[in-house]
Length: 421
Ligand SMILES: [Zn+2]
Image 1 (cartoon, rainbow, N blue to C red):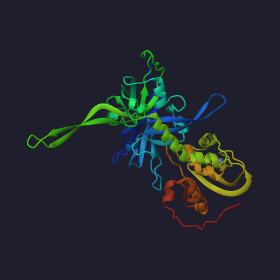
Image 2 (cartoon, rainbow, N blue to C red):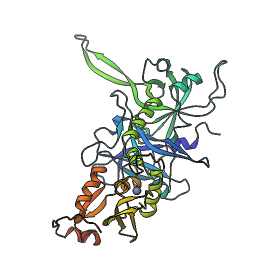
Image 3 (spheres, helix red, strand yellow):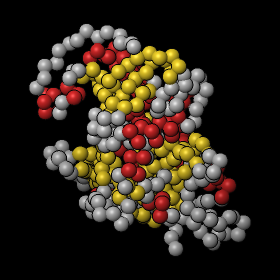
Image 4 (spheres, rainbow, N blue to C red):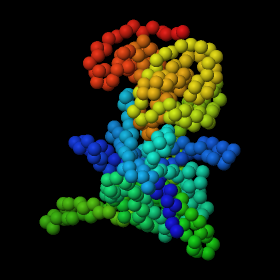
């Protein structure tokens, strides 16, 4: 038997930064976890989710990028894999979303593409927005109170082996929550010893078969919130001479502050409302939202592209009644022919899907720019205004040579002509 469903542990990731000097070493600074936001239910009972990585703002603040570590499947020989997540785009804007209130320490990153983790043989899961979350109103309805048991999952004190990352579950109990239930406070306290590295980790309820008469037993584990910090107390040492405070010791009180799941959901909704996900769903289909847009282009883009492949836009032409081979939209006017330089295969797509291509194949900001020869500089710029850093202008011949040769080429400006056939 298990009290925590094993898939809950697969939702948790270690967050680190690249070591400034040692190339292959990472320093682990915090914990994060994946939440799936339900966006459609298929007729066959299958559900589709948009994935978001959740952690604390203070874990990501002031960083250019982080690495997120995933485990391979249990019987695999391959080591854990670290995925780089860019936090700042080329214009200096944050690629992550924070809760709009300054005092709510919640950050989320839209993770567009779990297909990459599947392809790499990584084992991962996510808390489901429709069934795994315990928000304040549900906590109230279940009659949870001080003394109820919880687990904090995470990676305290860099505790894991180099080739795997398994989360540690610390057990504790709710120390104070009635002020949150009465909406007088925005965080609840958990009696659990927390260390650096725990920040951003999920807090999960413990299933209980026994309960006080008149209250319900909690049938299964749920996500209750995210830990933000260990509550500290300050011990002041005074001078015997003049009774002034000379030294202040900071001690861990053994209590941790937890932000309820409600604030995580709000941050995810803010992120979702502001990302290109929604724009694309509306824009590509004559103003009508298409919930399957991302599912479709993620599937097709990944059938076309593998890690390391370079994609070049080799032709652009106008043909009023053509269809986009990525999302299926019909009709499109402007056709972009994208060439996979490794496989030699091409697909013809509309401008919105060119702009979204990188997001469809990238996980957490893994980034692939589509290469545009100079003659298409104007179209490349247009793509970049739709989705920053999606297109990169290259010297026309460089794309067909290997990377070493390209370094020695002269990059000469060619006058761009609006190209139509
Ligand atoms: Zn399209």
